[in-house]
Image (cartoon, rainbow, N blue to C red):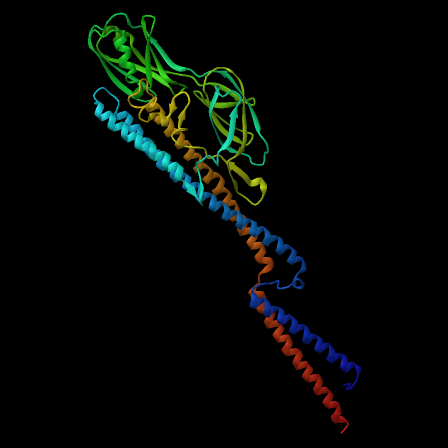
Length: 469
């Protein structure tokens, strides 16, 4: 055995000291990771990992911000939806009051009472709409409306833009071509209107709005028959005229959902034979927008394309070509983490002056003294109320659709992305306690071993000294 006191021995001790220092540094790193829970506590721990972790944390922050923004958007739209729900209830009440007020058995006092209730309901609708706010901002005051106008205001009215692409700057011009007009349901019966009824006659007339049984007295002439049918048009949606010597029934509105039907239940033999029509329907307008076929229901046109969703009414119901221009505006929401995920939702006015249609009338005209009040001649009160109810239901449905298919879908995607990004960041930046505990134990053993070896090295030096004694 070679025993020396010199260079070899010194270098061995230095190597042991270096090993001890390395083990101590490694132990310190493991202890820091276990104490902080972070695998990377300084850039020197993993330079490439720091870059990746910063990028993932930035992405995670953007995802969290988008989720929070969507939650706020959903809360805002839920306020709007609850407002529309209450308005819908009031319109249903108005519809019921109009129906109760229809008929010759209703006294003037009763009709006045019904009219007073309608006036109160209309006031309540306007008040609710004006007071609908979120975070101090009104929802239905026109601020969130998407602007649009037609080149011919007499031809195209009641324009409602439901959504647009906010990334498209400037106005969007649409070419509207009406190829064929909407028609009313119409049926002419070969009954001798010039001849008074030979017996009391009961007819049943059915249209888009409902059904009415009408009793005609024996000897009733054409004017009395027409007046009896027209008196029920609010209930049925069917009017009547004398065409030549025959009876012509027509729907009060256009479109394929409008229809007329008549059944003679008893009475005049001529009517029992000839006044029997099961169902005749109207037709919808045929319209293209920018060369693409648009959906139509009567004179109401619905278009989706080019990032736009809108509807409008062909007020004069004539063929022709018009220009419809959509501008800016609307409530713009950020659904994701980049600018391409923005969308603008149009929240139009739903007050009584806007609910309804130009060819029917508007809900505000059902007030006392209005063109369609209960006492007005040729009132379209029931048709207007039902149209208003449909418009509110459509607005509510579009809000619900936006919440479900835009916000909820976006949140589902963001939550999945958040989970994946969080996992990736965790794998890079967080401590693996199993691994670091094992490393700590390893370094403790190495430190203990290196210390023991240094002790042995020192003992070897002492053994050489003993030989010299």
